[in-house]
Image 1: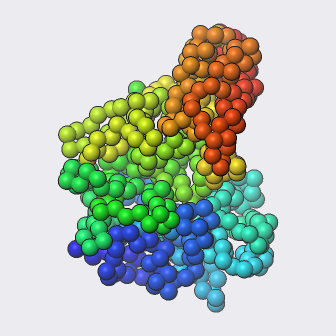
Image 2: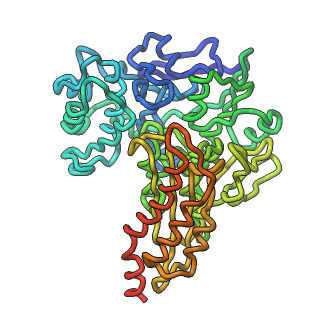
Image 3: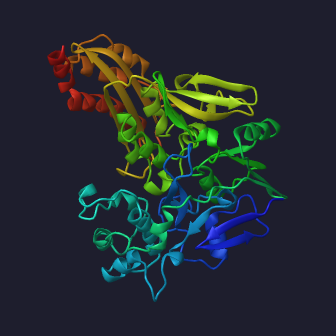
Length: 483
């Protein structure tokens, strides 16, 4: 059995008797670091937040520096952070020498019961050390993006003093150890092969090694960010005989452009993808902020979101609209499958035993008119009742090409093929869209549940197409002027 080692608050620790399903949060609390709390055990409250030192910059051609990212410790399995550096709220400052974030929260009344405070401290510290933070960005005098705290909940202090503390922060002082570490390479996630009576946990060093493991253990749980599996472990006490972690595999962490497509590695977390695309895929840029919280996006991956095959996953409608394909890898080699053919039933896919998602390919050029709509009970950090991705191209005021991806209205994510047919080749006018909206309302087989009734979901489909027209009705006029 390999030895599991983690650096916590600057001190290396060897984990004795490590178990494959122990969460980082539970282990930290067992070590006496009780600042991080369990509030929900599913990544919604942020009380468990910790900082992880991760590589920044180009992960392929060089080591780059370090980026401090906040993550939910309740969703991270302890073996998944083997070799990495973790900082808890206790490691940021002490009662006699408060960290600037802790000091501002204390001085501005940002804590009452205090249960959520360490999590806010950690998320705020991650934004405090974010490279490139500039005055005036994000409508804040100090450039603080308040959405960095969207995954942290407080039910007694109120958010105004917390926001005041965030907007009062300056820049890290010269000699700040965490700021200084940003210039140094981050400790990598080390390979690990853990064998216990409770199961096995493997972090292979390469894709061929991972595929060989999956060929031997076709029922193994393939683990990336763990934002879905962590909930299963915590709330449903799910256990896997063999777990294979793939998020650190170099072959799954590439992002490159060709003339025909952009290929996004399935092991990159969504925050990394957002930074590295830098708005060059507008539909994804619109979608990123609506996917859960920053804490979740710092761990969640496209490969994991597609691998769960959930009908209410937020990435499939967007990727269906972008006409994406998946690169599936196995010991026999790669194969490319259109995403529209990937889902075969409720949480069922064309993935074969021993196969995993290596990358997502989005064909180029991109459609010029796009939108993503998400209907949920909360604007951010909530599960979709209905999600719609739209990508359209007009020519001389006529719909030349259109793709509509739908989520939450069938057993699988689907393309709205009948609606696309009703729009294709038609003038981009209100009459056309109203007729197509009636068709859109009948797409899929929506069911009623605690999030929305079937009738509501059908109505939302029709209304979202009308909303898209209202927001983009000038696109036809612009096409005519350009022609």
